[in-house]
Image (cartoon, rainbow over all chains, first blue to last red; front, side):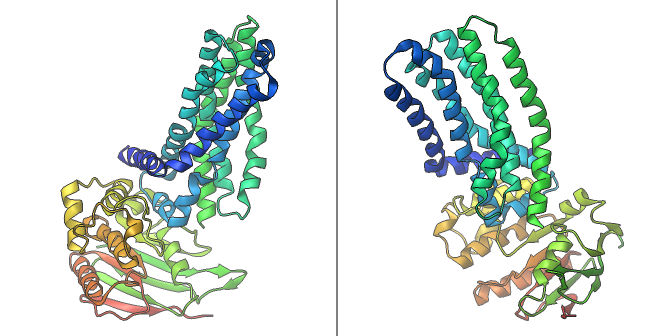
Amino acid sequence: MSAFIAVLRRDVLLALRRKAEVLTGVFFFVVVASLFPLAIGPEMATLRKVAPGVIWVGALLASMLSLGRLFESDHRDGTLEHLALSPAGLSWLVAAKILAHWLTSGLPLVLLAPLLGLQFDLPVDSLVVLMLTLLIGTPVLSLIGAIGAALTLGVRGGGVLLSLLVLPLFVPVLVFGAGAVESQMAGLGIEAHVSILMALLLPAAALSPWACAVALRIALE
Amino acid sequence: MSLTRLEVDRLACERGGRPLFEPVSFSLCAGEWLHLQGDNGAGKTSLMRMVSGLSPAITGEVRWAGVPIRQCAELYRAEMLYLGHTLSLKDDLSALENLQFASAVSGESLDEASALQALTALGLRGREHLPLRVLSQGQKRRAALARLLTTRARLWLLDEPFVALDPGAVTQLADLLSQHVHQGGLVLYTSHQTVPMGGTGHHLRLTAP
């Protein structure tokens, strides 16, 4: 447990020391979500209609930006070898790294989303649903993305390969995340969408660290 | 003392379908060191990585206390400290933070006072809180070697530990290794330099097939 906390603390600390990397994703999200209302025009009905989709796509792309760095810097300076030789077990420590990645790249998006949603004239109820779906959905993006990052570690031009690998897997999260907000605005319940998002989150949380650890061990050989 | 015994049995390594070196066998008991020699590209680092368990052995076997290391990975990792070419240090963290992090990952808790003491002993006094990227290569290596003063691991696997150190630090490190061996530890290290070491030990040269 202490090794888990040590890795979590270190990764958050490193993210705070290299603020530019964290801010890139957040800034990208803000810019994308702010440019759409300007481009589409001030018609409220249209804006409300596209809002969930635009914000979700922005969040998805923003969280992809930082994926490549998840294991890359640890691989370069040798700390990944050290993690692989820890008696605590690599998958446990990888789970800490993924959690740190979500805290520094996913959580800021969740917190910013309602503010950006206001630009699309979303009602308060819809903003709450938007935040809720992002809160469940962005960890799934980090968990699935981590598998892709581990598989493409050390591959030249791995960034393109990473996007090709994980984007299809991100689609269900996008569909049900944006879908929940739309169905709330249409007056339908959100339970079905949220249940499906949870059904994506739980197996991802259980299996992703283990899959990453296996992929990282192969990369280290 | 079969409990602390490292056995390497006919270990071989391939690169691009070609064997790197003649199969190697040796055993290391508590209180012994082994100096691994070989030309550039002879496969010293590959051998160290196989002994540490980072790379799987293609042929041959590594045993700790008589058990293959794949079967007792958790125990073996708790008893072993591997220090590779890349120092496993973060440039954005200070020497102190790096040392405390490395200890925590190895499952040892290290309070700040003992960490500072170890860094002082290696001549990093006054630089404990600077980010590593402003330190010199030799100072970074000293920061990595501070692990040796605080670890409880008995088997030390050191890949080129003397590189980039000044003569004083080389002597200090050699003393540290000798002391560990005297206390019943095991040291396996690679180096192109022949540094006088106390205690029992021998040299092993990797030969191309």
